[in-house]
Amino acid sequence: TQPEVVFSGIQPTGVPHLGNYLGALKHWVGIQDAAPPESTLLYCVVDLHAITQPQIPDDLRRRRRETLAMLLAIGLRPERCVIFEQSKVPAHAMLMWILSTLAPTNLLARQTQWKTKLAASEERSPLDPDGVSKLKLGLFSYPVLQAADILLYKTTSVPVGEDQVQHLELARNLAGKFNRAFGKTFAIPQVKLAPAKRVMSLNSPTTKMSKSGPANSQINLDHSEDEIRKRIKTAITDSISGITYDPENRPGVSNLVEILGNMTDRSDWEAVARECEGLSMKEFKERVADSLVEGLAGIRKEYTRIVAGDESYLDDLAKSGAEKANMMADETMQTVMRAIGM
Ligand code: ADP
Ligand code: NA
Image 1 (cartoon, rainbow, N blue to C red):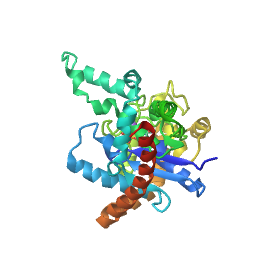
Image 2: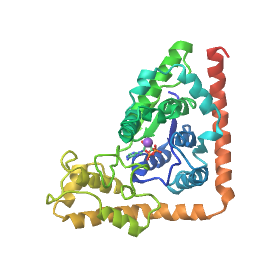
Image 3: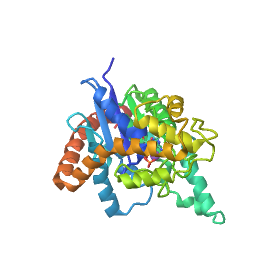
Image 4: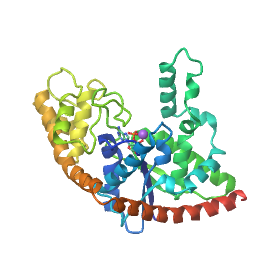
């Protein structure tokens, strides 16, 4: 069998939050630590994706650095992984264009993330028939760029959160279409879900925790102990007594149970809830906060150290990551261009 190629990405749209960590980043480190030496691991700061929502250039510059720093702070090792920025590898945009000529618009229109943004835009301006047109082509074609990111490295495995599963299905679909039309070129990538498939917002536990969510709904990986305790304390739960795991009827409590389980490396949520059965809500929240304070302290410390350190360190890291990624990408693109007759 072929050696594994692992690819995943994160948008530089803010300091990564607990959902990013438990749904993706923590898993990336686990994969790194278990990976056989012949496998290739690529972790990408997807800045071209970030600009599908308006970005202030100076903020984007800062956040690209912060995101790179966080990838190191969580424990990814640049000697083992190719850590790089999407915009420094032009082939991502080139392959996206080619794949876009195979991507049915009705499939794109069916993507949940697109539909959610469309619905929100219609809600914001119900009387404005042009309101919808404020959404841009880049946002619509986002999953095609994501497919290009993945296929460019002949990726076999993509560790992401559950919110990305539908996009991955599209990437698989496009790989199959290309292979059938032009000869076998791409591996069909598999999704690898972390045990924490979906971490929910702290103040609206039926929606996912997201960088674009309201303040107070997230725990960010650079939060202080006080901030973490405050946010867990004010997390929405319910007034039912006792702690149980019941996502449907008790989404807030169940989200905290999952967080506690993930922070202490357990995935049997019912068992985690049973251990907390007799606690009051206040005591339970303290236990959840303790697990976060303890589990995130090392990351925060390392992150602070890197961000305060020598600027050229991150620049050099990004440069050497881009060189490696460009070499792999160019090789794939030669095959792709030849296959389509260019
Ligand atoms: P965001 O959605 O917050 O902007 P990204 O799009 O940069 O984050 O996603 C980076 C990774 O984090 C993806 O693999 C995504 O699936 C994962 N992820 C994002 N939010 C969550 C969440 N609430 N729970 C689990 N995984 C998540
Ligand atoms: Na996302």
